[in-house]
View (cartoon, rainbow, N blue to C red):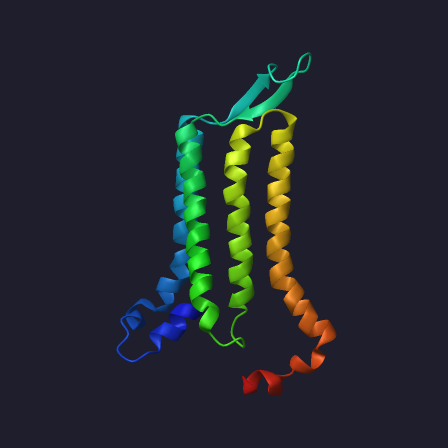
Length: 175
């Protein structure tokens, strides 16, 4: 929204009409509804189910989740990837905004690491079987979450705890 606000202030910008209050308030609900619809179709047509897998380890039965419809699974995964890509592009465009309004440089870098984590996850996930698949999923979720938290919040903690002189109103207005 910050990027749109700065671009809409330029003279002759077409974004002024798009910046209506109702337009901005509908972005998140519309995209959430699209994702809920895709997931609803997936769960309505071919939901995931439990699968007993006994071929990977001798004498051990592993209970795992079968995705059901592979097409629906990849539609959901692709849509979430599209949302991540759009978020990365918006963060990349917001890098040039003043630091007073946004920490877009940190968000851009954290989104880049987040995307690379999940891009490396996909081929590894498809080639892994058994117990290691669950560990891989947990590791990918924890690594991407830790990356986002680290690059966004550690920078704020640095300014608040170690450089409090930069966290005053006068310093923010100078920028």
